[in-house]
Length: 421
View 1: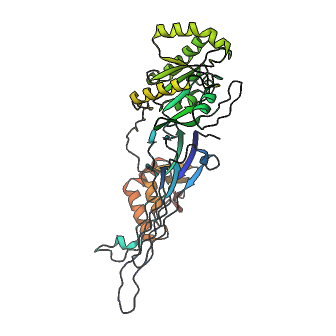
View 2: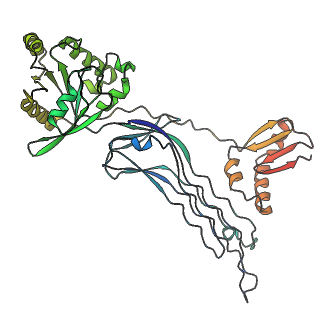
View 3: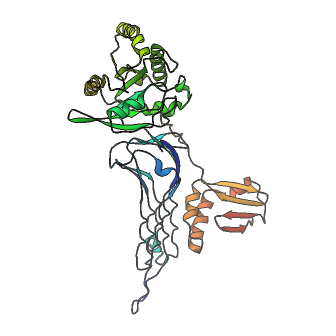
């Protein structure tokens, strides 16, 4: 089954913890600190694989976690780096941040890579804190948490030619005749609910055609498959309007042309200007032959290029392929319209937030959150450094403004203590 849009959650690996260690060797007095740093957590990387053409891999897997870095060791040995997780996606995958709606990456080229989330930085070992005034530091950092995001992946087909038409216009039959693709075909509307690709051999080259789901009037407003249909046309260089010349599917041929032009134009001005060819299908039917004089007269007035075919019998397909080949030689690679990236509002982050629940005051968030996460609370020296920073940032005054009283509980990370005035 074709899958063209999915939501996934991704998290980089946690950085390894730094370690507190001191050199201990026989005959070496007063060995110094030799605690190594923790290893970086693994990144998550998207990589384009030209062998894929759907997002089906993500149907049953929505959560991805890179491996954590290892903790440092004594002897100034750093921890091992977490293994990067590479996720493969098909060409034509657009990557959106689900929280902001911003486009992060547009992956089109085989082998192209995009760093989706970073792993956390490893914590520093105590060897990194040695100074001339503190030669035996008893503190180390915890590893940093990896980045976390919710990502929406959206696949836009990388086809050169897009077949567009109202339901039951004969697009699937046409694709099966000109390529080795074998889409499901039936004589009732709405048979194509998902895009189908076909490689068309012509002269000494090939063309990639896409049979796109039947378009309904009002698609630009989301009717039927709506935008899920229209977005697939964006990257096609040439558009073929496949028209049921018989009118037996419920639409007069000229009415069908007007509907298609209106829907594409309302969705994107760029699409209506894209090189296109009108293909009057079902020439083998009596009704089509009766309608042809009026259709041809109207199209000549509009100076619109067209050809008449029968996908069922193969009539006119050689002329169609020649016309499409010529259009592709002249058609530029389209510029894809993208939603505007939402600009982040820059504002100064507070040093911390204080959350009160009765007589319990929790210090969290803001600039302090990363310091709290990386503090080794088993090390008195690390804890005192954190408390000194919080005091410098006005913690005691802020607690008093929140109404704290002597004996109330203050919570910082895993540490709880009674407030004393």
